[in-house]
Image 1 (cartoon, one colour):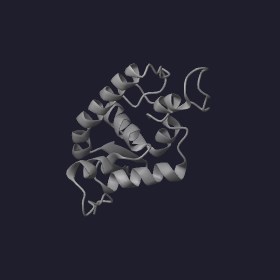
Image 2 (cartoon, helix red, strand yellow):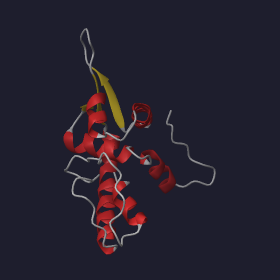
Image 3 (cartoon, helix red, strand yellow):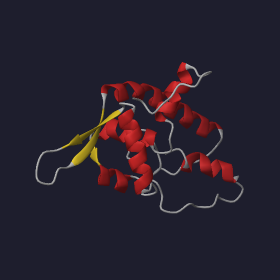
Image 4 (spheres, helix red, strand yellow):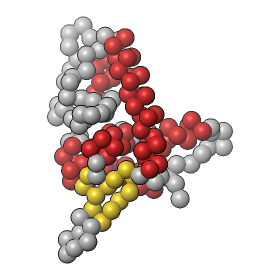
Length: 150
């Protein structure tokens, strides 16, 4: 049973957006798509700003929505890793289009995102350890555009 529910007045686009709306879901999906399966702790290291609880929750929702699978390896100490499903693969053109649109919009706004932050492939998204204040003359909302992108 999917954790995404279609509201009474909902439509297909709301349903689609709800499947990957979440602060870290898009980044998780992109990494699993472009870099293959990851173990939980690898994802934790990749996303240093996410808490254990939030990452667990986001992964569970993605598994429940059948966008990723949770695999447990055999052995005395089974290793759990997450991989993208065919359904998750089918969302990637939508996410890529959103990323392209966002990059164009950032250029229009004359925002200079740090080169280390990107939810867009093929780079690993790296979240900075500190939240910097905006440069002089740049409104704070412009800084949040690229810090919250991933």
